[in-house]
Amino acid sequence: MALIEICLPKIGESVNEAKVINWLKKVGDYVKPNEVVLEVATDKVDSEVVAEHEGYVEALLCVVGDTVTTGQALMRLTPPKAENAPQSPKDAPIASLPDSSNGAKSKDKGRFYSPLVRAIAEKEQISSLELANLEGSGQDKRLTKSDLINFLAMRKADLESVVVPKATSVSTPTSKANAPLAMHGDELIEMDRMRKLIADHMVQSKQTSPHVTAFSEADLTNLVNWREAIKSNFETIHNEKLTFTPIFLEAIVKAIKDFPLINASVDGYNIIKRKQVNIGMAAALPNGNLIVPVIKNADELNLVGLAKRVNQLADKARKGLLKPDDIQGGTFTLSNVGAFGNIMGTPIINQPQVAILATGIIKKRPSVIKTAHGYSLGIADVMYLSLSFDHRVVDGALGGRFVSRVAEYLENFDMNRSI
Image (cartoon, rainbow, N blue to C red; front, side, top):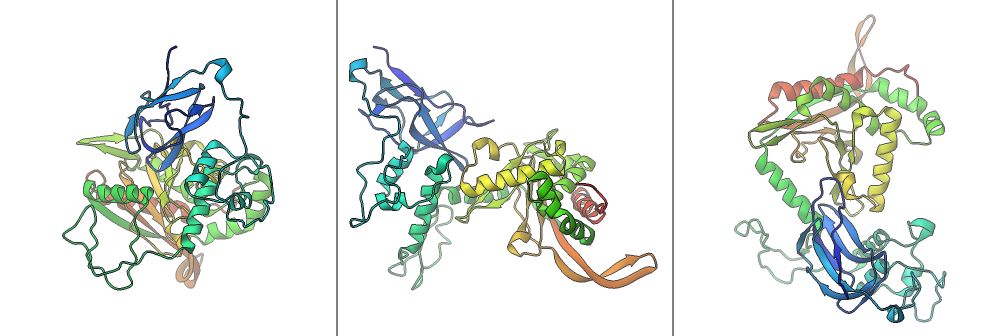
């Protein structure tokens, strides 16, 4: 009887490889059609590999930690004989989980869980009662992998932190010679996989690109007043909240059209001037890690379209539902450091892009205001902008003009525009 191979499917645009992070099946296990058998990681997003056929696991062809490519065989199955195929339902109730309820009853007895959720629960020793009391974010309130990850993060925060027992140096993969001396009361926290990826990406960016930062300020009084006046009607008409982010993106798109070399990448001594305008928006996840979902073809969207995409991607990021395609293909990045109360920042370029813009907090400040009768002192809503750019490609004149042009578009916002 011919063996069946389960291969790594195409899991995203321009994504050709992934890292194996967790097997959910072992040799001898029965696999049902459309059952998740393996978890893989692509950059900062985890994905699941599903078996299209049923059978018994004959061999696992890779191990945790391996990097696999699209189309590579991951598992071999032996097709079952009809009389030997298990007759279990597609989604059986969870079983064999440790129960710390001391006799307490589940509030939703008979709840069903996916194979992935069951596997994580068993591995992490999540009790039946804990599962039953978790609110699911999936369809029909089913529990998802992200729900369990968020629960585990909160549970871990309640545990006693690991204390460094004695004064020994803490080494890092990059600089053992400069390792800090441990002191009494220090906590040793190992980076999770995503934080390691971010750390490597940031170091690599600094080593690759000579960073220069240009600053500008913008009087956003007209823009702030316009948004305040129309935001309720905007949400009523379009069923979308209007934050400042899509307005900033609109100004960035206009400035990119004026200075297209900002929308570029570097390949050795070649400059790739991008035709597509795909703007990433840096977002902080609940666990403190950073991710950059991308708004594809932002230049083809109006303000309503930008607001919809911003809200969709932000919601997916919060729920841990971003897919590989959602974070691929960026050509320019916006980082809103003002969301954390910062007046400005010097962001690190998201390679292989050549520039990233940071917007600070909008604050009321004393300002010299131009009127029909001259200049006077007044109160204005002011925001600082900072552009970090790759000096191999973008010189000071281009970088300075670009960030100033973004500020001009924001300052000259049309208060009479319709929604």
